Image (cartoon, rainbow, N blue to C red):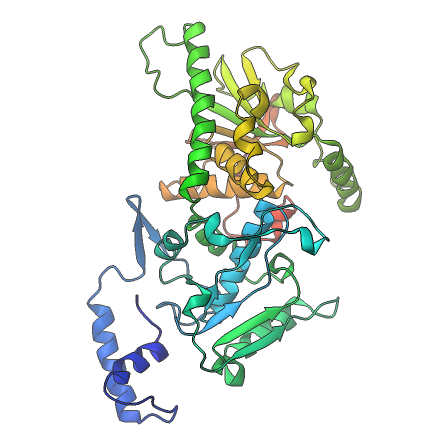
Length: 442
């Protein structure tokens, strides 16, 4: 792994001399920089990662001048990450980008297996590497973000407790200035900077959407969870193939190997409807809430939807016993939720966080995804699907048919259909993801 200049100098001379002080000889520094330039020039692939036959170009950080890598002997520690799956993913990415700005390795944080907002003792911490692949993360995010273990710590210069400010007076500019001061001077001499206080999801945001997308790309589920998602997707496609056979869909000899499905993140539970109605009143926006009837009608009007299509409903557990959720769909649309699908047992044996991760994966892999543009869950799925399309070399999916199309059911399109939905990757921060304004409608 390439190391930043300060780390390289220590490694280069440490083999022959004792640890040097900061007052290095100008001649030695000049010589080291000369050889460093030759060394970096010899690697034509510098700054590019190859993954799944795609060339992933590392997006430059907003504030970090050095793009060569993250120093491995200085660390950032953050509080336990809490709330729902996608809030935790955003919080983790924000912690990663903070560590990158400080040119430090992020100590692997604890996630929260349960969904509790105030009862700290009920949060049930779960290690990051029990959900996502640790080694794979560092491989895919090489030279962009580095994740470390507490076993990597030495006992050199101790820990500095950095407390973020709060309240209305703690504005974005003050927060950014605090971070800039922490990457230089006496604070930077500490081996560990430990940020105390608020959950990283509540930190001020200083990074563009494309940097968050870069971190999310490195999050790969551990095999145990991925295999559970495989079982659900396999069951959906198996039923889809049977339906296509029954309707003689394959009469002309087309392949049965791939049975497409539609996934809908359906937010119609009572607590969501109360929340979104209040949000509509505060924001003076009328296109946040959607009734079950509106969703069914608009989904039925998707242009190009096959005459027989299996529809997976990602719904809250409180709706699993509501048989009405499966009634009233347009002819040809065959809805299933996890209970009717016969996979609810797969979900029940896992914690809330893992259940959400499985559902996220099932929705992400869908041939067509439909969600609510004011939902963080839906928004991150669309961000991921948008990123896939971009990796194919397509910068805009408006007006053309592409793989993995997404739609927002809360924004009606022509003929009471659905608006195609892609993420605006040029946004300067991720705030829009949480409030629906990051949607680009075609």
